[in-house]
Length: 329
Image (tube, rainbow, N blue to C red; front, side):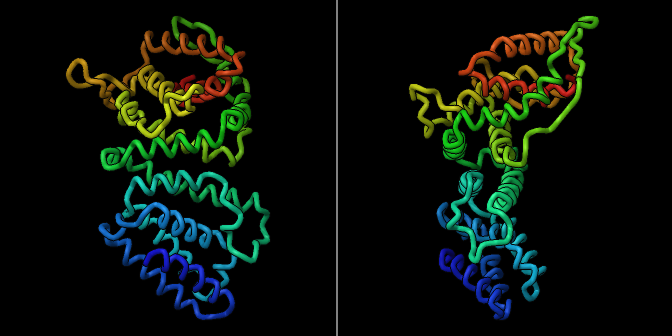
């Protein structure tokens, strides 16, 4: 039924753009709203149907012709409300999988016709920004939903995204960010047993096209922060025995190391358990000499690895993460 309704969304909007009343668009959107208000029905929607429906709604939200339709502003509002309702009530794991997959460039055949006056790159950038906003909404409530989702499937989606992107592309993104990072971290000196940095200038060379990658890494960072080392028990759908280690493993290990160094993770529970908790008390404590020493050691290790081609992209990411985890740097 939902697949048929998705087709009707496209048809009714197309008819309205040709001069027909927009009333049928409202009826179709209202039908979908009634469906997704019911969590039991919303959870029954499979990944493929959810993918098709969310894609269709996002494309119509971006279509520059919609505001010119009868009641165009109301239709845009209804499209927005429906999209948010789907993210709230659809099965959470499926939503993550769909949104992460949509971060990749959309097949041109899925765009509505006739083509927009905007360039393909502009449309793609706008679509990516909408998808990132959807992923932000899902990620914001991860702390409350982490035990409701299938982490194995979400980590598989992240793994596929990173592998499809490839190390060369990831390296390119962080090479764009390297001037800013290096200018903040290059001059490290001692001042009364504290690490002091002298920033030279700042610049933001990374464009909007790196937002999807940064958002995926944010999701992974949040998952690691919430589950600690237990996250490694959810890699059943990631081929960790490959000769070339999957990219996701390097980032999981790095996130664990940096979160512990930043005192955002501390061991909890009986001795021998591998679960780690998020300790806000430790996170809010002022930096101590030992924390500064740890930062100095991390920076020294990172600078030693900069010349290694095999670890170049990881090193760039480590530098970026340090600027986030140590704001005083």
